Length: 136
Image (cartoon, rainbow, N blue to C red; front, side, top):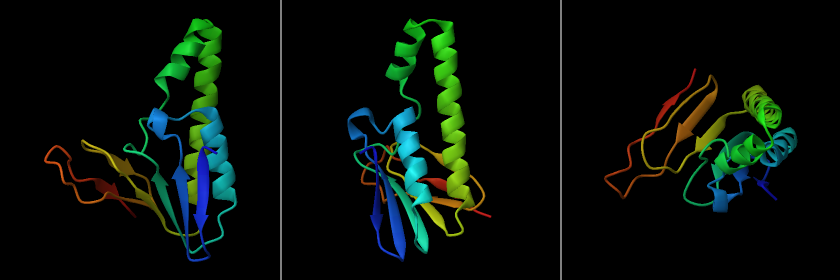
């Protein structure tokens, strides 16, 4: 299971569960995220992740594997992953409840999307910058 849906009627938590690859995005994870978002029945949603990284973005290894198949394989994979990512973001934004991304990461991250707030736990490392967020 690459995405878990946890919680009760008050708060649902969507947990990215691919920590061995730093929750990098692959089609199966994004499909499971779409299914989990569709199943949300709660007053608020927290999007979080297992492991030390919220998500490193696209899975570089998966892109390299497709590149080995040639330009057509890489183009098809890129089209698939971008399409699924767009669907997942739109599904989260269309939820009629607050959505909060609980992000753990080192460095600076900015999440900008109307209706999506982001937060990070307090840092114990001087190398971790505070997270900025954007809400309507």
